[in-house]
Structures are given as C-alpha cells and as structure tokens.
Image (cartoon, rainbow, N blue to C red; front, side):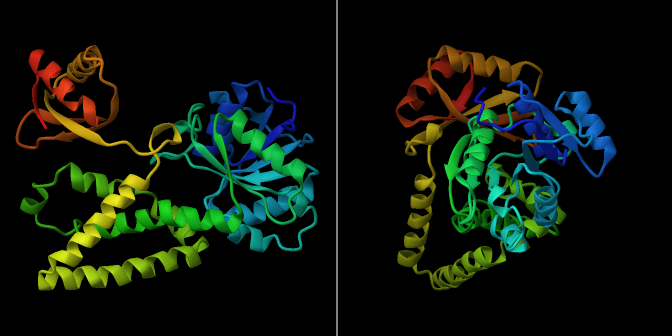
Length: 353
C-alpha cells in the first residue's frame, strides 16, 4: 500500500458507500474508523469487517459519506475538529463548496465522487468490490493543497477505482449530463406507466424496462441531488424541452426528415459513450435465446456460449408473461454474432437475431 495515504481513515456515514469504502480499504490493510448518527449502522459495518468504531482517536483522512444535504456541514465539522485531509463521496460538488467559503482549513478539503452505487442502500448492501475499475472524480478547488489532492487520489486508487481529475464546476456539469438528466427523463417515462391500463402494461418489453430502471431510485435522495445541482440540471432540461417541441412538431406533421435527424442524433449519442476499458464504443449485435424458467438453465446457456469462444459484452433478460420462459439477449461483437448464433443452435438452443 502507498504510504501517501494518510492513516487512520475515518469514514463518517456507514451506508452503502461508506461501508463499501471501509471494506475496500480494509482489504488493503488500511486502518479504518467508522462513525454514523445511527449506532446500529456502525455496529453492522463493524460486523462486516469495514473498520472499528471511532472513539476520538486522531485521524489522517476523513471521508464524509452522508446524504447530499449534510455533506457541507459534515465537511466543515471535520475541518474544525481535526487536522486531517477531508474529502466526501457526494454526487454534487459546487453546492457544498459554497457553504465552506471562508472556512478555516479549507485547503485540506478536496471533493470526491466515486461513480459507483446500487439501487439498494444501507451497510448490508455494501461490497468491497463496489469501486473496482470504476471512475472516481477528484475535484480540488482553487485553494486545495497539492498534498491533500494527492491523498484523495491515493484513496481512490487504494479503493480500486481509477481517478478522473475535474474542477467542481466541470464535475457538476458532467454528472448533470450523464446521471441527473437521464434519471429525470427515466422518471417522466415511468410516470406514464403508473396509471396505464393493465392490458397496455402486458405489452411491456425489455426496452421500457431499460429506459425506466433507474426511475426506481430513492425519491428523497434524488430530491437532494437534483436541487443541489439545480443550475446544471435546469440548463439541460431546457435544451431537452426545446428539442421536445421540435420532436412534437415533427411527429404531428409527419416530418420524417426532422424526425430522422433527431433519431440519428440519438444513435450518435449512444456511440459516444465510452466502451469497455475506456476505449471507443465498438459495433455490437444481439443474439436472442429462449431459455426455460428452470434452475440451471442460465448456467447451461452461459457455459455453451463460453464454449463457442465468443465473449459476451452484455446480457439482458426479458421474461415472457405468457409462458414459462425468458428471452435472454446476449450482446456480442458484431463480427461474432453469426458464429454465436450457429454455435448455440447446434447445441439445441432456440435463437434469433
């Protein structure tokens, strides 16, 4: 382990992210102390092996892992009560920084945001592998010291993440575009389903599940995130509203030219998303396989896919409400889809593309 990481590390907040970070650091033999306003969470995180309860010991690094509305006050308290480097794992960076303006010791504060999480919450949802290979935004402000910045970068690396260096303002614009806006649009689409007739919902497929999945996030948490990043989110929503007006006109008038331009722009956006290992997105194709809803069938399918020598890039499962089967979509490199299809067919699977 790199000695540039100040120790012990105090984690304030033992929910999903705080407990996962404790577990990730402990596997690298970092000394971790835990604190939370809910004592039961500390006991649970301690029992999981994420660290030990903080009992007033001096610390070298404080990680604030609390809900967004509480990040600024908790960072201020950590700066006032310790001489440690202080960071956080919140999803908004400029709002807490505004609250800290003029705070003594602010040069010891560097914001952070691991791009990892789960739809579950609490310490029991934690995993030591949560940050492995994930981006971790490190966001030093104008007065952050070089030593504090390096300490927070080392924290991210020790947890298994890859560091992405951004200013607080750049970070908030980036997450508004890649996280906050998609969440809100997912919510709007999902909201159209809440009162839909049952026979309409019977036609639900994987597409609507893909679009609405993130809409199931905790509303109380997302209220804090969106209002904390209101300027960046509102700007993007305004752009979407303007384009939505154009789309409505194109649909209403049957303007296929304009509609085509909007659809092509969407294709370009999907291709702009980085591929695996941070490389460019590569063309993929899907092979759909009908799988009986019985124990062991998925394992058999993956074993047969592995025997074909084709690497599976992604997997989606869509259950057929009318039959005891599921439709498994295997996403593979475009040049390998024919081979996978033929290989699975030869092993008795019912497939199509």
